[in-house]
Length: 57
Image (cartoon, rainbow, N blue to C red; front, side):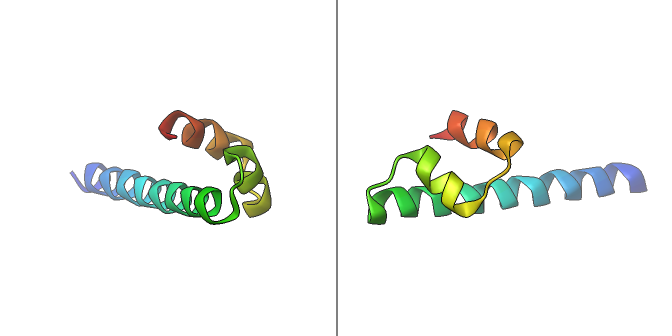
C-alpha cells in the first residue's frame, strides 16, 4: 500500500510539473509571439518533455 501511495504522489508531482511547464510555454507564446518550439528552446525543455507538451498544445 505504501508503494502505491508513493507512486501516486510521484505521478501527481510529475503532472503538476508538466502543467507548470505548459503554462509557461503558453505564456511565452502569447507575450513574445513565439512558436511553441521557440518557447521550449528558450526554456531549455528536455526532448522528452517537449514531446509531451506538444501533444497538449
